[in-house]
Length: 139
Image (tube, rainbow, N blue to C red; front, side, top):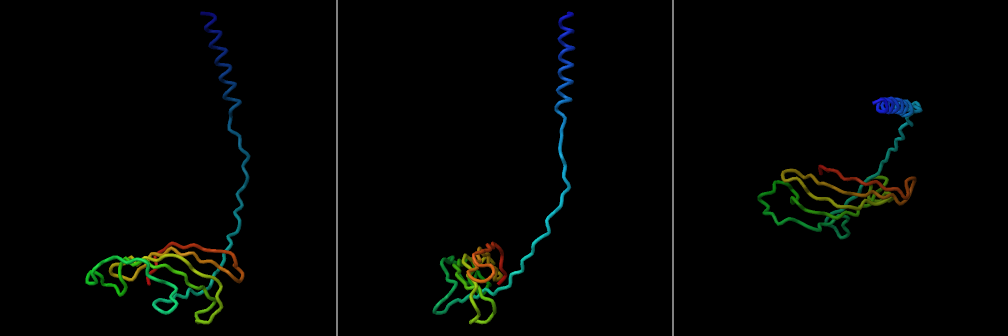
């Protein structure tokens, strides 16, 4: 019995030392957020459909009767895009890159497209940079 009591006291002393030695310690530093860097891009996306040199072409189209579609463009049409990016709205503006991707006409009663496009800049300040967008486009 005496040996058991002695063992219990030794265990209590050891366990109390473990609790003291395992306290959480952290060196906290104040948080100083970096200022937000904002870049304003201004360019024009030139798309040409149905000409001698189109930049967007139909690559797939659903077989749906036209009387089920109230839109001016066929629902469920998939386009491939390779459009020039220019510095101005004029046709002869300087080309600064290109936009490549896919667009699906996804609106049955509207002309909405879901687009996945990569904007790649080939000249100017942002040469070598790209920006990818996956979004809805109300045409």
